[in-house]
Structures are given as C-alpha cells and as structure tokens.
Image (cartoon, rainbow, N blue to C red):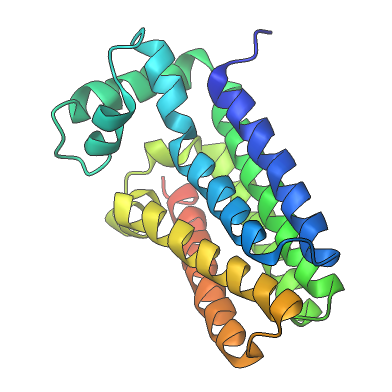
Length: 213
C-alpha cells in the first residue's frame, strides 16, 4: 500500500503531538510547545488538501483549497467531488484521519491528567464519548456523508470543524502554560469546559446521525 501525502501528514502530526506532550511534561521551551500544538492542529485542518491535490493532479493549490472550504470558493464544487471520489478509492484514509485525531487528543488529555492539571473524570468522559461516537459513526461512513441539518451544522460544517480546532488549540496551549509557566488555572478550567461541551455536542450529532434510517 502506497503511503499517500495525506496519510503521511497524519503520521507526522501524531509524532509531533507526542513530542509536544513530552516537552510539556519536562517543561522544555514552553512557548515553542504552543507553536508546536498550533502546527499539529493546522496539519489536522489541511491534511485533506494533500488528498485533494493528489486526486486533482495538482490542479487545486493550497490557496484554492482553503478558499473552497467556505463553500463559496471558485473550486468548491470540484473539491467536494474530489473528496467524494477519494472516499470511495481510499476508504481507509478517513478512518486513519480519525485515528490520528484520537491519538493526538488522547495524548494531550492523558498528559494533563497525569500532571494533575485536570480531573481524571474529564478523561473518562472524553474516552467514553469518542468510543461510542466513533463506533456508531463507523457504521454510517464518514462525516462527509452526514445528511441531517443538526449533524452537518454541529459536526461537518466549516464553522463546526474550524471552531473545534480553535478551541482545542486554546485549551491545550493554555493548559500547557498552566503547568510550565504557572498561568492561572481558572481560565484553563473555563477553556476545558468549553472544549468538553463542544466535544459532547459533536458526539451527540454523530450518534444522532448514525441512528437515523
């Protein structure tokens, strides 16, 4: 099986996430860690670009791809069609992307739990949410196939996808600085609560969609 650029991107962001966690634990270059977390999340946001670029044989550049994700870009329809073809040709790709997301997210949640920054109950909630939502969603397909208005608005819309990445970056970066730079923990709890609510809403949307006929 040939390693596609999109899959290589997933592997790279997983490795960078683990490196970032290691640096947090040992308080190595705290503000560089924030940059590293940003890179990990950015790679998650654009790994689809590499798949689309390969499918369209380089016709869609990064600027065109980023413009298309608003749904109104010049190449929006072409990008959607390319993603649909990719989901049929490389069915494992979407699942690998989800697996990469989970490994990175679990790495950070477990790190902050290990460092006693957040209660272990939060880790349990996240693990249970992802386990059930991913299992239900696997029976349905990928998020690109979501049909209901609720699911697409909360989970598959550009606002939903972009919003979760912004909140993850803010929460994980701040919690890292709580441990390494003694930032006030209260703000960290607020960001964690917002992220947890966001995660639960998206999980509910996945389960709701997967149980629809």
